[in-house]
Image (cartoon, rainbow, N blue to C red; front, side, top):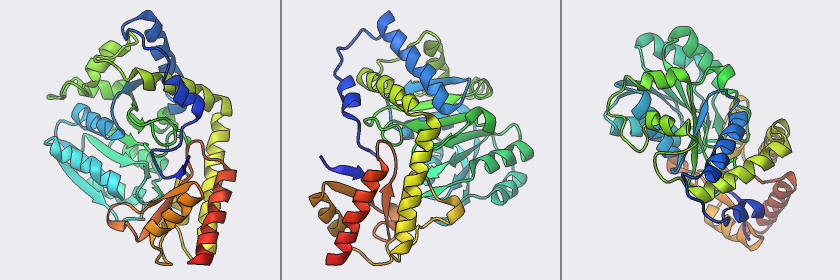
Length: 356
């Protein structure tokens, strides 16, 4: 098996893969409803929330769309510092919303000062923030940004994409005042792709009641009617729910603080290694991600050739994404990856350097 140091999909533990092979159940049965209720209760611990957590058969991008369709009638501010933040803006425009950009260069973070200035210029129903930009390896200062929204425009909803951070970084949803927090299964949660999780506050759902044309598949008010009965409006991704149930047990058994510390330590190790070999991380030190390290390709490596070499060692990394493809490469430090795995990868990369 190739060990994948890519920022999703990531490697999945054999026992979690095995959980998907459990016999199917009627999705309206008490047996399945008990499992579904249990996964939500465990997920709340990971989201650090007292509010509901939805489980939907989609990617994280689906929940980006849910956030826009349910919580924005017209005006939204999109904070953009990479490809996936840009996607959320594109989703808003595609849904007919008036989306304004607060945009910085790739590798930069959205700062509280920039957000404060933008919110003073115009009132927005919601602001979208990608916590951990997977394309650039930048972790935006979420606590500071949330504080600015509460200070300048307290009735503006805070919508946060934590697709590549939740489960690898502590995000205290309720303490921060986040209204909608989304993630997907194939990154820090170390599950197969195809499942999205999102938590929403009472305040957010109250807003949704006054938003028209929410659609059907991602109508959170419809989801809520079924969630309170431990169900979904449509047939759920049952095998993935079985896997989620098992993996959440494993995550909680590791201990959340221990899990977060493991992710941070692996990221620091990769960052230090890169700097020591003449290749700086793209992000500034104070904004560096703890789950994916985006590294400037200062040595002009052929990333495809590097990956071919690594695959002979049973490993794989990721090229840069979008407009910084080949100019950067990415090493994910998320999910089931251990420090021993990281050390093996770095040793293999040093071997590549010797022969190139």
